[in-house]
Amino acid sequence: MAAAEGLGVSEEEAATRSRWESEQSLLKESLICSNTEPWQVLPDFPGLERVGGVDISYSKEDDTIACASLVVLSYPDLEVIYEDCHMVPLDAPYVAGFLAFREVPSLSEAVRSLMKTNPSLMPQVLFVDGNGVLHHRGFGVACHLGIQTSLPCIGVAKNLLQVDGLENNEAHKEQIRQLKNGGDFFNLTSSSGSVLGTALKSSDKSSKPIYISVGHKISLESAVHLVHSCCRYRVPEPIRQADIRSREFLVKITTVAESSKATR
View (cartoon, rainbow, N blue to C red):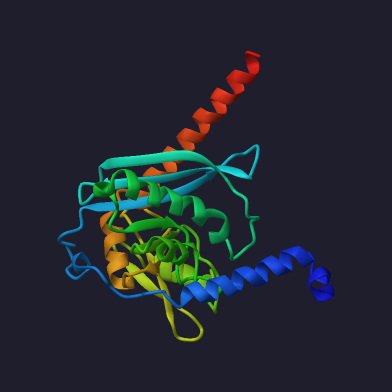
């Protein structure tokens, strides 16, 4: 492992990377990048009634604990009908390109808990704050969560992951400037010719696009259309609500903990 150490990577981290890469490759064999559900066939998604969003908010004091949030919204009204926020330990270290191993266990558990306690509120699709096949090895956090939960998943990122020839260069910025109205988009084609995702102007007022990629069990075309239909602001409502509620929960927990310390 001398070479790994020479690159600033410890022997333990190199072994972890190797193990996780093997696990990703194995999970990737089950990935489905096409529509699998009846509601995905038509543009207005008949039969789709519940959309979910997940988020992890990290503690500023300790990055080994965080708030995991799962929300379920009615569709197409986008009203929150279920929320679950709770503090979770983050046992796995952060390693670039392997975020799923740090975050997905807690998010998967939240989905499983809902399935046990109130299956009638289970989301029919999950929106994930992160990437799907738009990833260094074609298997981002949205793919990982999709495989673990067997749910259709969509990756929605706020920034472009620069992989396989995709660059946030002047040409990319010019394409963004050509997006005039909410719903306008352009595909993200890699240097190898594969379409890895789509840049979408999610609302008329958004100056920056969001980057959509397939997570699992949905086509890119359907994913883009569904994401746009869920956008009141730049970020689709399922992810936006999950983020808001996880941050609020984290603040509440922190405030309670500080008050407890002050009264001792």
